[in-house]
Image 1 (spheres, rainbow, N blue to C red):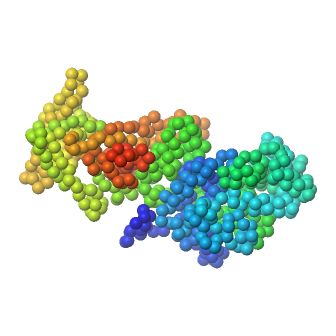
Image 2: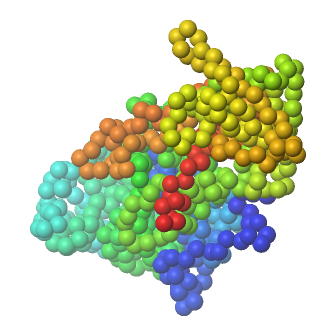
Image 3: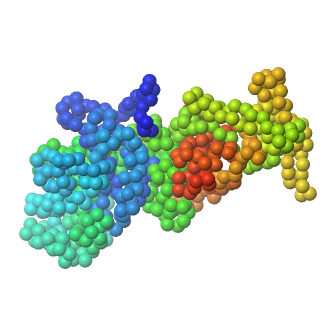
Amino acid sequence: MSESAPTPGNATPEPTDFIRDLVSADLAAGRVTQIHTRFPPEPNGYLHIGHAKSICLNFGIARQFDGICNLRMDDTNPAKEDVEYVDSIIADIRWLIDGWADHCLGLGPRDAGSPEPGSLRSAVVGRTPGPDAGPFHASNYFEDLHAFAVRLIEKGKAYVCDLTPEETDAYRGAPDRPGRNSPYRDRSVAENLDLFRRMRAGEFPDGARTLRAKIDMASPNVWLRDPLIYRIRHTAHHHTGDAWCIYPLYDFAHCLSDYLEGITHSICTLEFEVHRPLYDWILTQLELPRPLPHQFEFARLNLSYTVMSKRKLLALVNENRVTGWDDPRMPTVSGLRRRGVPARAVRTFAQRIGVTKYNGLTDVAVLEHAIREDLNAIALRRLAVLRPIRLVLTNLAPDEVHSFEAINNPEDPASGTRTVRLTREVYIEEDDFMETPPPKYFRLRPGGEVRLKYACIIRCDEVVKDAAGRILELRCTADLDTRTGGPNAAKKVKGTLHWVSAPDSVGVEVRLLDRLFTEELPEAEGRDFRSCLNPKSLEVLTARVEPALANPEPGSRFQFERLGYFWPDPVDSRPGHPVYVRTTGLKDTWAKAAAK
């Protein structure tokens, strides 16, 4: 069963929000007969948790309303894009929307009989271009987009401009003052067509000329002040090679790619709301022959203690402040996956925070709660000691062994039980013992008693130290009568400790992860996000664990009791030498706050 498969009798209700209400209304009114959304990332970096919200929304709407969602690479800027990012995006989305593939285009082989991508004729006759062996690409439509640009020139709605980038900015004006017309704005249609043809032929260097839409330099919306729609870049493209030296800008390519693919609902984040009039202007001016897509905006995800800028995440990678885009401390989808976060937990998080029209800050604890909630139901319980201190049960013989039954997962009775062995020497956690404890300290102390989980009550009789005063071992007595079924099984103590048998346990590498940033708003204005990197975001230990943890099945999830949720790192683990990463701790600050 896939991770996303519903459990009988435990179906999750479909989410509701203002965009889904609009979709429902459009279907009910007959404005559309099938919902068609898209997710159009630029392949200039790895996807992060903010993209995951958009993925869950766009693909989720397609699944919920029996529609289709296209994966399209917005690859119109070859200087920053790479096939590595394309591959990572496909892998991340496959993982995140596991089980929703029936409503996706662009993640698998093209369906037999689908028209080839990039066909202007297919768009004109109202058919959706089909994907090839991978995702859709805006670059698939370069010929179509070029034809649309020529059509704008012919209609007197676009012109070739010779202003430099600096001059273009100066002529554009500002939100509080109108811009000025370019001195090249009134070129004839014939001259513009000739110059645009020569631009495509590679006659001019980078930056020498641009193609601009002719709209209104006095518009209060600066995005309508004769925006650039094509620029010259003599740069090889990862998908089209050296076929082009002029490339469309996002605002021109995006709306027309939506049109070519038959998108009905183009769902963007709020920063694109001011771009919507330009989106509509381009589609309207071209007088296209079939129903047009419409853009809708929602609030992006802002997550506390997290950086969302791909540019800043790239800086962390390039400056070796993390081990890569998939470093499990990173907020990237690949980082979350490597950390052991279930895809279902990310989808639950996206549904829980909802879709609104208002920007806000989401506490990262909400994400951690969703992860913890999911893992609690599926993770097998195991005993592990991160910082061992030796404990000798002096009333047991050196070869004496007592076996106890331990529960594998109290949330899942079908997971059964296992046997743990109590031997003369065991390890407990270093911070579970104090010689001079504060009030209300319920763990082990000289003369004090605690219960070893699943086993029995022990009493600390003696602390053995070396010449420097360091603790070598604790000498204790085990009260075997307090074991389950024993005559004193009902005896109560306030402290219960996790432990492992010293001779049975094995040493493994454990990586304790913490938040990558120490400040709630690492991207706050005036702050260098590097200044609040957490120097303690990674701690590497050699822990002692149950022997079964020496050879875990790949992908296994565990709760190390009293310590958190762990899984074997899929990159660095080797057969017989697992490296355990802590996915999240057991402490749930958000759930406590939400309950108040």
